[in-house]
Image (tube, rainbow, N blue to C red; front, side, top):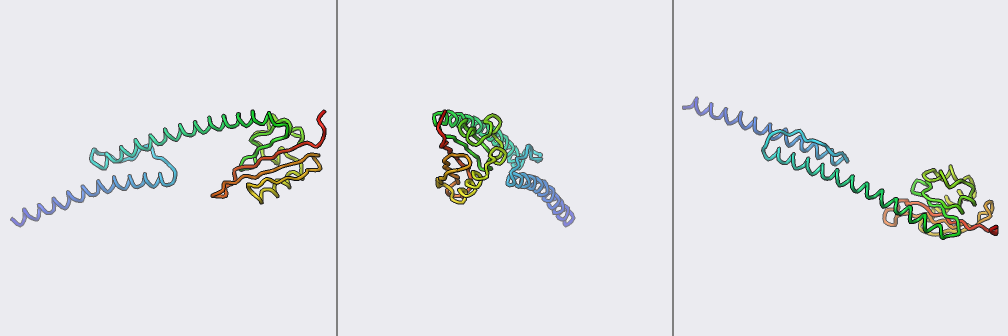
Length: 195
């Protein structure tokens, strides 16, 4: 009887070990997938076999990750469409403004410039989009004024730029809550009479 009892206990212990090690491996793989997500990566597959609850959880997470990837791709496509529409709107609005307008992004790259601004500052409009302001604006007085204005975000600053013979208004825009830079708008008004 004692031999049967000891054999039964050994079978229970070995069975528990096998069961727990299988569950433990699955849980560890799900935990590894969760850590990848925490670092901004989305695993394609969670290597958990079996049809138990741990396997079911792994399949549910895989489907959730796939849905999230699809939703993110759709969001990125929508953001591009919105940006294109916004750029088109700004371009059309600024055509009604006789002053020169230059719009810079947070990295000081030109996102928009109209013909008047290009004529005053002296760069071609075609090919300026996406270029850093220092590539397109060679006027030290205007660059110095832009740097000065960046010390006072969300406030319009004006001054005459003598070397360009124009009045200038600059507003460096930062997000109010975080202070994250969003870009700058430069308005130039030529003091020379139009021909």
